[in-house]
Length: 288
Image (cartoon, rainbow, N blue to C red):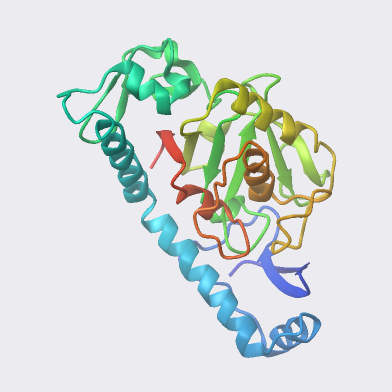
């Protein structure tokens, strides 16, 4: 069992893995009656309501992680079908049609499978997009990076999210609770991090936002950068707070400001798992 550490989330005391100790991905954290009672009282909830919320979120996290690869494949097939429906008389999809939805592919050497929606890069010139690249960095300006590794999280549910900086592809913008960033363990809130996402976590996916222009990617990254040094948001339900940020809230809001709502669940919180189920993302890379 991992050590439990308490933090306040909208008056709810959530228990999270202590620093440097990995949570058990297969076991839901357990709480004593006194812990649940105290948290319920401060949040104006009954113990039963609070426990039901915790159980539901844990189950949804486990489900999302289990089905992650399937979800990615489904999203790709749906995009391929959407592109094909633009012109029912064509037998194949042209690069210009693909790049209408996936603008990051412009100028890249790739093939697009019109049945599966899978992209195959022909060489390593695609750099941070391609599995052929030996670089540990992942993605380019404005790309959304997600892991559902339990030990990566600043909360009990598991997972973490980042956005690639518009300063350099070698940097990301991320929000951590103090002690959870291996690179900056003494810092709290929104910070620069070295983009080593291909090697930092076991399970990772990099996402493009479909139908977005290069300006949208730049602006999303700039929005996140504008929040630098603002504190971590422990109130996960207050997604509209623009002075404090948790990891996936920062990424979601950066793109929301560009007219793209990447919350695939719409359940009052925006967790990393919710970004992976959005209808507006395409996984250009995954290590699943």
